[in-house]
Image 1 (cartoon, rainbow, N blue to C red):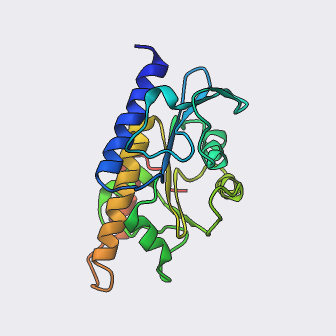
Image 2 (cartoon, helix red, strand yellow; image 1 turned 90 degrees about the vertical axis):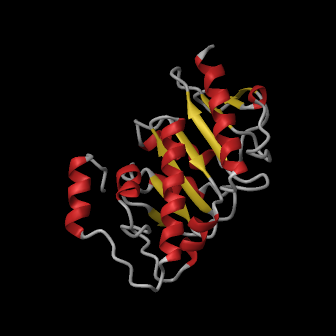
Image 3 (cartoon, one colour; image 1 turned 135 degrees about the vertical axis):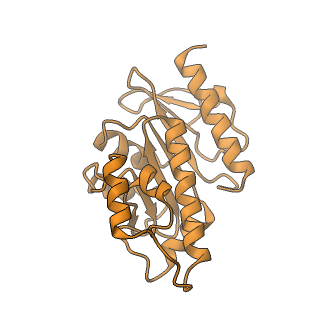
Length: 215
């Protein structure tokens, strides 16, 4: 199996799993992954993550010209902003997951680091998660906002919209965005209950031991 064929299958398998577990519904959410030749595979616009056809995944050249497949998601600027500012990015996943969106709407959510230190895993997989303002769907300003972070964050949440996570490959990005959603769920479940969080010292040790990008 070629690299492209394998990656198409992985994208569809991951997308269906996320859809089936309610992490994104309807025709929301999108995934992209970069091939070794610099071209990009991306889920098509208006498609459901639960019913993707590997043969219809959009294949774009380095100039974002469509080589094959259906027209890509309108969120291209959001995805390419991560590829252009983080050299280690091999894939980007964007969901409309419920708990992440809900947490983005609360007035006391820290915009610079929106996930409280509930468990070590979100820290290890995500580092600090930036809460970005609301943008109209498809607005190229989302990509500009990510570029404004200068590659310092691998994960952001678009207010009232959903999370976006970059990873070294499509599996890493998928695992990280699921950790983001689960941590947001825990934050909401314990909101107002004065939960016992990880201490600053414990967070610091995690950042050091696991070489977390804590910019």
